[in-house]
Length: 78
Image (cartoon, rainbow, N blue to C red):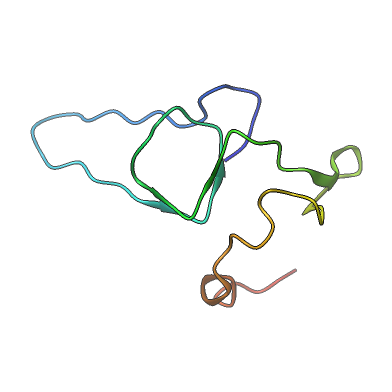
């Protein structure tokens, strides 16, 4: 969850119900300080080449190796 805003996540509780969330293995721009596991905060993702729509992460990216391979296996690469 990376973009040009200082805080890319906005959470709002509406009503009296419980409100819980958990983000895992993320690179995210946020000022939230709870609800995250194994995540990187407020760092440039270092994509290979945005101008050519290559959003693969570079070998020096802070997002490198924070993913969960078991989750990744659930999705087919195109």
